[in-house]
Each structure stands twice: as C-alpha cells, then as structure tokens.
Image (cartoon, rainbow, N blue to C red; front, side, top):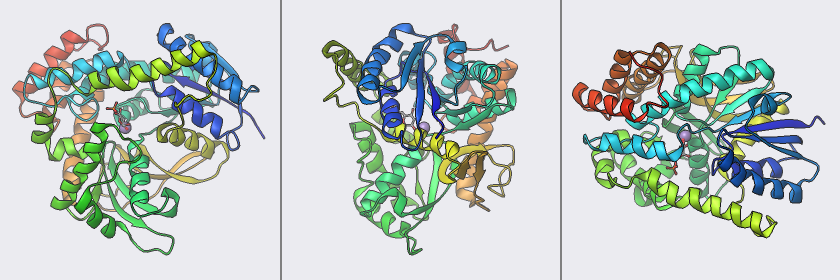
Length: 436
Ligand code: G6P
Ligand code: MN
C-alpha cells in the first residue's frame, strides 16, 4: 500500500493536535510516510510542533515529522495539503468582532462582517499558497478549512483554477453526529439530505437503514430540548445547539445548521455578545491557551502519554476525506463545491454546500433539485455578498467592498457598512489588499 506525505499549513493552530491525532489513528486507511507542519510563525509552530514530535515518535515512530517555515520544503513531494490558516490569528478575529459591535452589528468571524475582514486577509494568502501547490506539488490535493471557507473556495476557483482543492467545514459532520446520537445511533446509520451555503445550510431528510425519514421525529425532539451538544461542549456551542429548539419552533420543514442563528436571531445574538470581550477573546483565553499549555507540559514531561489532546471531529473529517481520495472509496461528505446545476434553481457558478461522493478523481456532487423560496432567498443575498467580497479582494475595489458589506444581511444600511469598512481598512493596514 502506498504511503502518503501530508502537510498541515497553519500548523501553529490549536486545532493541529486533533488533526495529527486523527492522522495517526487512521493510518490503516491512510498509511503515512511523512507529516510536515508548516507555519509562518516559528514560535507557534514549535509550541505545537515540538509536542507533536513527541507524540509521533511514541505512537508511530516509522512516520517522519518535519517542522518548517519554508513552503518549498513543506510542499515538494506532498500528496495532501491540509490547510487551516488564520491570517492575523485570533487577535485580529477579536478586532473583526468588536468593530461592528460599535455600530449595533454582531461581528461574527465567518458569516457576519467579521467574515468579510477575515476573507480580505485570507484570500491573498490562500491564493499564494494555491499557486505554490501548483508549482511544487501539482498533483496534490488541498483540503481546506481556512475560513470563510466558501469565499476562499470562490477566490481559488477564480485565481488558481488548475489547483485541486476541496473546501470544507466541520459544522455539518458535528451536527450529523449529534443528530444521530439523539436518535440513539451513529452518523453512518443514516443518509442525510442537505443543501445550502457554508454556515448557512439545512438538513431536509435523515433516512435510517430501512429508508424511514427520521427527521420529523428528531425535529419534534429538538423542539422540546434543543439539540443535545455532545461533540462540542463549551458554553457557547451548548447555547448554540440549544437554540435550534427555537428555530424548529418557528420553521418545522427542515433542521438548519447552527450558524443560521446569526441571520434569524441577530437581535438576540447582539444582546448576548459582550462588546469588550467577544468569542475570540474567550477562545484566546481558553481553547488556545489550554491547548498551548498542554503542549508545553507534554514537552516538559517528554511524553504524550496521558495527554488529553485527543482526536476530534475536526481532525477525523479532514482525514476521512483525504482517505476517500487516496483509496478511491466513494464515500459521501458534505463539502463546498461549484454549484453547476446541483441546486437547479441557483446560479451555476456559485459555491454551494452539498453532499458529494469523494474519490481519486475528486468530488461528484449529488443533485439536490429545486430548493424552496425561504431558503433560496437568504442564500441568494449571502452568495452575492460572498462574490462581491472576492471581487473586492481580487480587483482591489473599495466600491465592491462597500457593496459586499451593504448586502451582508447583518448590516442594516450603507452608512453602517461604510463605517465598518473604513474601520476595518484602518485596523488591517498590514493585511488587506489595497482598496481603491
Ligand atoms: C466551527 C466552524 C468553523 C469556525 C469555528 C469557530 O468549527 O466550522 O468554521 O471557525 O466553529 O468556533 P470557535 O469555537 O472558534 O468560536
Ligand atoms: Mn466552518
């Protein structure tokens, strides 16, 4: 069996231990020759990477582990690039979230205006990375978590169409897992019907092995208790899962993914957010700090034994996709792809989130057909915002940027859009493409 070389870019992230753990766990289906960790921040790379070195040596000494800041070293000979970069780190996310709060708008790092700022930082980076993949490892697949993942997909599709790229998000698989658990099963016991955009999707059916649709039953259960959050269990995600109770109380025909809370209940989300201490600040002080501390502790002890940084849905999902490509095994995953008729009443050049079969040739999306007006209406406006964001970044256009933010459903007027945009440009001098 072939052994694969996998590179993780943005490896100084707190998500890396979960991905490395999943890689090690799943060596039976994705045999490993080498794991390369690359980050442009050498300090963060080593906080995580030095501990990963101990982990790999203990669990899989036959696998080579390389730490580098050099893309040529990291990309040459690789089969898969697992991308999870966050340009400006959580520090910039915190600014993205706080600026709109001054004007009565939730920032939100992916679907709100915060996602616009994030995209303007990520697009130039991800395009440069994709070009280097074409240069150094043209046969390699990028599997990308870097957010906002659909906007990144759109930018790569336009700027580097020749690269092999799949953009993904762990919300659909974690929600599938929690949905299955509530019904007393596992995700693989069900067939899910799903469509939408990234962080803006709906489950419409959930068939069991006998072909019975269990979604109406699950929706009734969620109406009572909310979704029971077992996969992500910090207070924010628990609140988010509970809020699904409110959604299905209002709209019973489908089960939305949790990010729709920002569109359907913006007023409530605004009240919940502390303008001086946003979600990003919490993640810096908790998840990131705790992960870094555990890594440092592991390095001090010289062992990974007993360490609680175990595998995660985030890691499992990306590694399962790589394995489905490697083994040509035609497994189904919810991913972000160009629509091309998958949703028949939605524009063909838009990136949509849907189920696709994944194999050695890439992905084959499963047709969705026509979608209802309620869902389509919101998707149209968000998709227009996403395309205008990519236009703004690629053309360096201030007007396109203002149009994008004006269309974002969380932004109430062009006046507010302009204030947010001008503050973002000021705060992101080091990162944004020049907007004229
Ligand atoms: C999920 C989403 C990611 C997002 C993350 C934020 O995992 O799929 O796209 O970045 O949540 O979560 P956090 O816990 O950092 O607020
Ligand atoms: Mn996501």
